Length: 453
Image (tube, rainbow, N blue to C red; front, side, top):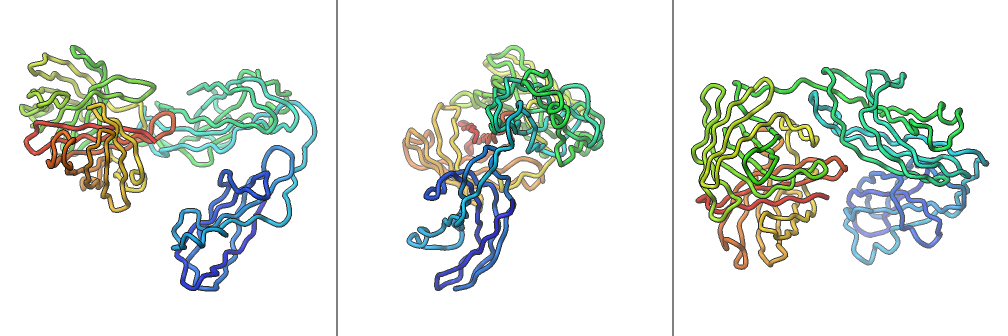
């Protein structure tokens, strides 16, 4: 249905551009609920009024509802606190949603999205979808939904990339899932499908199952060839396994200047729980990348190390050894396939800004706030305060440059500064992870921190 409403500025100064949202609740006195639509509202001069409309999906359960419009939902109009009391308004008439009548359960996939929409072969994309029971009278038993892929927007594909359990769903109930999917297809344009109740266990009638169990994502998925680093270097992102150390897995970046950042750790549900990091400068000799100034920042002070690695720029693979006073560790890796991370996509500020809760390699908890400008402030649970700046790396790759300065004690290195890198990516459950690594000027102390939201 379409909701039509006016926004009026009853104040004496111009209101800045803002956002209005539409909500539907069961109460005529409370607007607490989910945003069903968001509408941009331009700046309004004193006394000005402007009409708007929004399309929403009505509740799937029969009943009487109230439609609310909440203006300036993001607080950008410049209103004083006293002016916020009348930002929400409810439609005069109730919204009546009729019962469609009895019948068996009927499951449908809706709201299918794919992010990112462009990946490399064997790369990961996150598929998010909702399974809804459209029946107003019958409960759907537990079932399985499948994610599939082909190059048709009209023919349902065979072959399940992922199977996901769907709980029992009462009349009108729904559940939303996000799952990481690896796609080993040739470069091209593909369509992602979700098929509900593939084992026929939900209790649907045959007509209900055939009619709407499959649905295709409205936006296509593009698979592109892997970018080969210019000049045949090892630049890029890697993931793989370790032998000889305490940790079984690692992720590693080799930057355009040969700088190496490696994080050893343990895999947990597609996330790398790292124990620290190694950092140094690499030098090329043909298909070999060596570093004689590697430092292992899992220790304080950092432990000196060396590495010798062979790489295949075309395949995006790397293997070698790291030698330090702690022993010798062998590593072997290739393109990252367990998270949707593309090193060649430029980093942007839109997803990193805001509030983060991070855990450091010193087992400290850090509350971090990143402003639109890239400036940030942080406070640890142990009382260390620091501030700095994060900006996309000028190379145009998916890496941030980070600089910070610590405050006074109890910070580990009071008054000292650090420089390093930040990484931002989504994880298979749909959340976004921020990871930071930095070193002080003489490379004796390093700090790593990570968190999801």
